Image 1 (cartoon, helix red, strand yellow):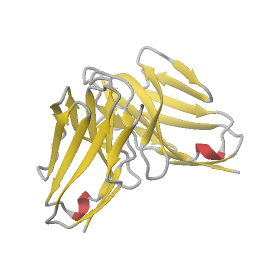
Image 2 (cartoon, chains in turn red, orange):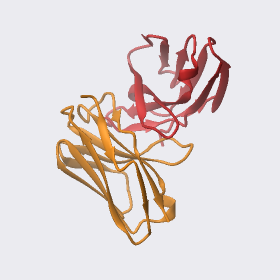
Image 3 (cartoon, chains in turn green, red):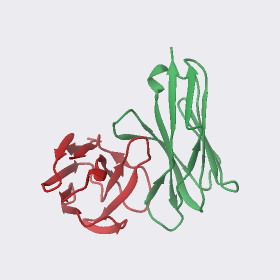
Amino acid sequence: SQQGEEDPQALSIQEGENATMNCSYKTSINNLQWYRQNSGRGLVHLILIRSNEREKHSGRLRVTLDTSKKSSSLLITASRAADTASYFCATDAAGGGNKLTFGTGTQLKVEL
Amino acid sequence: DTEVTQTPKHLVMGMTNKKSLKCEQHMGHRAMYWYKQKAKKPPELMFVYSYEKLSINESVPSRFSPECPNSSLLNLHLHALQPEDSALYLCASSQDEISGELFFGEGSRLTVL
């Protein structure tokens, strides 16, 4: 299984602080994506980073990818209460098409 | 229109019932997906349709039967389900099956009694 492991499983921070989540995976990939899920709702795509990229930014999000370590991190800067959600990394195996395998997820709680 | 619409939002069914989940997208996407998500777990891929043809079946039991009537619609027919099939069923679409962002619906929460 290529299912990624994410850590921490849960993270609680104060509004304004930064939140960092990590994802590890097992096989070679084409892309790595991060998704956000509010409780019991659908997933929303946040950012995609290709296997030949090392870092990508989108607004308050910064994603890094280290293919030699098979790991990625998602940094959310200046967090807000509205960022409270579960965050999943998802990978597609090299040559496997868009068959995404999701990591175990990090539950982020941002408190006022 | 960047929405994937799923109906119904909630469904309760008995083990002998037959029901269907529906999914619709109007983004011109050619790949559509069914995922199953149990509480506090990541989504797990069930089926992938590419250009209206089933391209991936992740060894899903035959009591789940997918159907893609046209490029905008995806159904999941349910029959003789078990209580352990209770979960959130998520539909998604993407431009194609090669790579890229998935657009998810809000899901159908299924309870099997």
